[in-house]
Length: 66
Image (cartoon, rainbow, N blue to C red; front, side):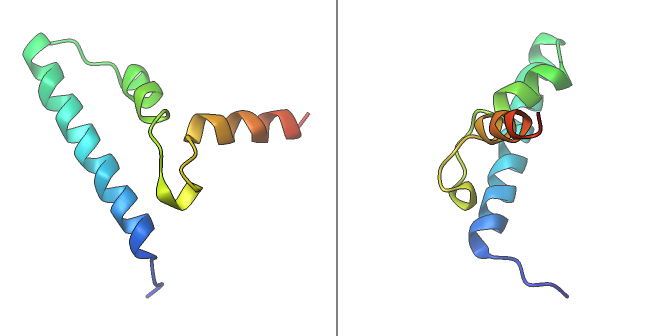
């Protein structure tokens, strides 16, 4: 079994909690958008990413692919 760094596991647990909260909040309003949730989650800072936002890393990777 592969070893997972605790910071990665912690980030995964945080993302799961963020999703759970957003789903529960959206159940009240009956409006749920995976795309909107994805955009919100992409702005969260993560320790394994050296406290950078996933959306910023994705943008850099896309610029480098050109």
